[in-house]
Length: 297
Image (tube, rainbow, N blue to C red; front, top):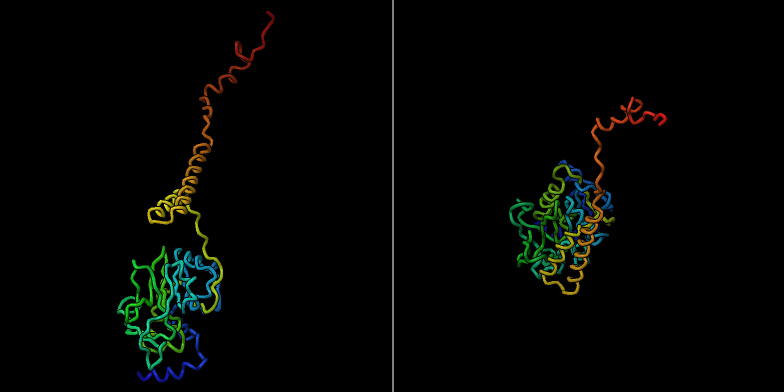
């Protein structure tokens, strides 16, 4: 508890705020290839890379970020508020105000969040937030961490070949908040997860540009399956039937193209056996052969 008065005084100090320099230093000392960058192009990253996005509101293509994760990328997404909803939407998440809980030292934003003792939270007794945000997700999924009243605060999701960790406060990773409670230990565990298997880790404090990996064009069969699933799921009849007819038309077109143009299937003459093919040339010019000139009648 000795740290709380120091923290309340330090909140007004601009030096070190928003900087993940201490986190970067800790990752490098742990043997992780970590690069702090002000901005980065998503389209230039290999699939086997990791991103720590401390400004979720600066993602140019949220759909591109989802494709990056699905292709095998690992991403930490730190959320600061409802302005980050466009980035959260492709992951079926949304931001909301935090619950009204008692803050530390009468500071309403300094909320202590108890953690489970497993996974990324192993050995982390609690986190201390400074700009907390609730992060809601689908009812079918379980959040990785909640506030004391059960409101979701963090998620760890697997998408395709990659993984995504979402937390409702980017200040957990900055220099000023690192010494508090288990913040530093949690940040280092997240960094080790990002850098596992020798992956390079990019600590992005500004814009994430680019569209990321291009989405594969769905086959007619996949489009038909999606349309049928949309109908079964109770989507609006008009849009669902239009999608179904479009998928059926695409599938029918592909079938017609295959039956009419499956390749050159015309029968080809079979070559004569070598003996017959060479019979006439062998007889040419011989007495009684087909090449013998006729005499006068």
